[in-house]
Length: 113
Image (cartoon, rainbow, N blue to C red; front, top):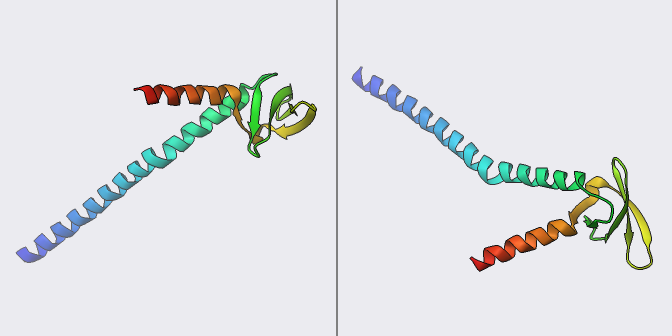
């Protein structure tokens, strides 16, 4: 009878440790993958909402230019000296010149330390 009680107690303890391991794995997954991705999405969305005329941009396809017109969901920009105008959706903007300069300055300051 005593042997049965200890077997039940160890099985219950094993189940509890399994739950703790699952919670720990989820916490690690959240802090290493989900949270940084959400921060990156939020930063990109703020960048896209703060675009203004004359800003230099790069699209996700690698095309660069200066913004000449902004509507609610599209952006028109000029590329190069021939002044070709392209119209793209806001979600297609990858980076701005301001954003790239800020990242370069941050990387340079990290390199000095």
